[in-house]
Length: 443
Ligand code: PFF
Image (tube, rainbow, N blue to C red; front, top):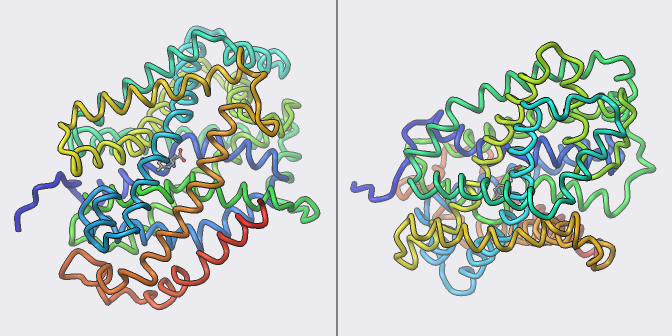
């Protein structure tokens, strides 16, 4: 059979690329600070619960839609069923714009921190000084916007080159290095004097801390971290070979992503307590805590730089998957040449990210319901758009295209999947009802 679409070269290649999408700033930047803001262990438990029920099911649903539909989200919905379902695909493309706009701002911070760590600017262990350094950096109207532009340009360059040349090769080498470095840093953080309080915070639940906000945050984070709800995994699924066992791939990606998030928790939270930072410090938490950890290891500037570079790469592989959703749509549906689509979309996203960056400094006075532009974009995407996309994707698979996504002859999962009945039940009832309940309660 002719295979006009690009494809991942191998099984490991696919799992690593999909894990490359899932593993990113969501794990290392967002997860620790959300856990810090939402009671630690309680957040962890809710998060794990969501990941391995709803998350895993929606992950498989997206991969299956992608492989059976062999297209970008808009094209896949149109091809498998069409009609109003296509709107879910458009919603995904829209969400891609929103997420990447603020994601790239944080991606820019990692580039800046790599540079500043290398030049010794952040060789401090004093909590207040590190907090001030971060605050001053993000509040500057020029620097962070420049780094955001640089990060976006790097993303565009890789995506413009196409799926198999850029994405897979980059992930294959760099993800394992990040993993090893993360493991080493965890050991350092866990053995700091005073780390015990952080470990207890992360592992000993206090259920009196659960609020509607905690539950929504954990659910939103499950979607964000696994790259679910907007079609990134549909797009990646469309590039996966028909020989691949999809349920296994879904389990691998979900598990690897969760492992990295939990490791990041064990890296950041013990250090937060050891150095006397505030666990509820918000989006700056990882950026103020890591330099303090590096100040406590031999060759800290070297390892610190390496870490921020690898974090930037992890962010880049996630950003690539966000942009790929938009680009695959423009290429497949609109016939736009790939490079033109990548640069054009990248430019719009760059502009959209500027107010996010400025909202942490000169535009901080502009707020809606106490949230600045950056927070609004994040909240809208993670806690509204992605879970809503998740409901629709689950319903689509559970009720509408189940026979098609199971049909092995046409790229479906295949009937030897033992948990198919459970999976379908979760897609039909459990996931949509649970997500809807959480969203409604929050509003
Ligand atoms: N999962 C990525 C992270 O955790 O950093 C972010 C992300 C990528 C979200 C792709 C959504 C997406 F479609």
